[in-house]
Image (cartoon, rainbow, N blue to C red; front, top):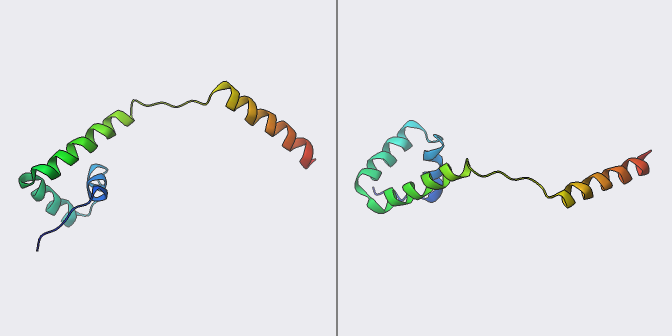
Length: 77
């Protein structure tokens, strides 16, 4: 039987979420399927880059949240 792997399978592999049998089957497939290996390499690069990303809200977003919070407190009292 030929197993077709999805991107989700590869992500689960990257995050060590496969059971032992699934991991073994996927590892064997990676040895012979260059396209699958290429897709895994791309996902590994994305995972690595995710660690470099940081997000912070703009000052206007913070101000809007704080203003809403002040108004909400007055209404609920």
